[in-house]
Amino acid sequence: MAVCLEFNSTLISLNQRSEDTFIDKNLKPLYRDPFIHNDKIYNIYKTIELGSYSLNKNPILSTELRLKKLENDGYAIYQNPNFFSVYTFAFLSRYQLSLLKLCKNFSLDATHGVTGIEKGILYTVVVRHPNTETCFPVAYCFTTDHSSEPIIEFLTFLRINGMNPNKITIDVSKTELLTTEMVFSSVCVQWCLFHVGRTWIQRIREHIVRQRSSTMDNKTLQNQVMKDLKALVHSEIPILFSQILTAFLLKYSEFTSFTQYFKRNYLDNNCWHNQLKMIYLKRKPNRHLNRLIFILTNDVDPEFVNNINRLTLRIGRMGPKEREKIKRRGLAEEIPDELIEEYVSKEYDESMNVIAMRVKSFDSTSNSVYKITIVDNMMINCECKYFAFRKNACKHMPLCHRHNINIQTYQPPTQPLLLLEQSNENSHFEENKIEEQQ
Image (cartoon, rainbow, N blue to C red; front, side, top):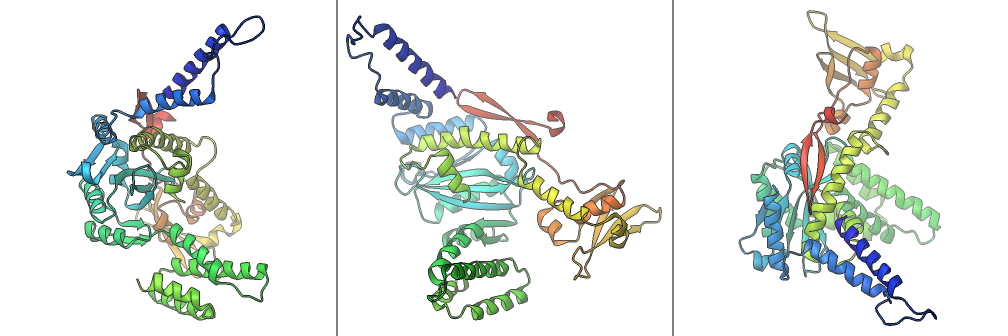
């Protein structure tokens, strides 16, 4: 904002000067100064912009000064001892650190081509924010070393600062897989479905084609292949997975090139980075490293925080968590009032207080019954798979609330809201309780 204001004031000054000095009675310029060319304006803007993030003419020294400045602002900083040769460092803010300690599921994303430095890679650890279930970056690491060492250093730095993951999603990379398991021995590592799915779509379009079929028929076939692959990915029981896999390979055995590719890459062995490149870096590869750090700490983090606050306070367009909540409630409301007694039964303690409810499955072909635990008239748990995976109110809980309005549905814990206070170049985060904001 400060850069834009300074640029606008400079432009106004140039325009006023051109009006004052332009001219004689025949409207002919007296000298060349009144002419304002777009190149001159661009150069002024670049000078102002460069001065906003560059702290030294030497880019390496400027980066080191920037990291020290962040450390003084409360950031946790890691800097490789051989910084001037391998160019490896990591950083995260106080609020990012609090999320790092709170969350148990993480995604490690590698983004290439974010600066003009050769072989530069930006590793970002992303979580699902508990308030909104939208992605939120919690740590950054930049390096020019493509070996496993910087990943080990980065993850070790995060572990020391309180990261204790149950699951980590990574790109399709053996290096990331081995290093993650080395630092977190008990963690469950899984590949990113987005990257895998995008690769599958490309391969399916290349190899799943019947020459004598129409384009529409081939497209229908390709969609079915993708649907079968997703069913394979989401199967949780090992025996069922093996059965679906065998049936899949047999069903599409005529497409030998695809089945061989699938076995070779997955059986024998857009996302955060797209958002960073397209929105914040404008798809321009030649960027100073100092500018990348400046954008991450002054543009990316404040914008993510503002979006979290907006969604938490339910301002404007709703987020994925609220949409899912409304969807679950709608499924429960489809049950007519006169049939609720058939779906819901209660369990009492010795004092005749409700301690649990049992809800019959909404699927008429299923005989499953799910137990909902109740403590102090609050639903705290459900045995269904949705609650176990999402830790949010499932569709059975609104139905129980309709049955007994005195029993409240489960409310997941939320993080405090943040107030952004701009001080010169840096954003300072101050915690504030949601109740105070509302």
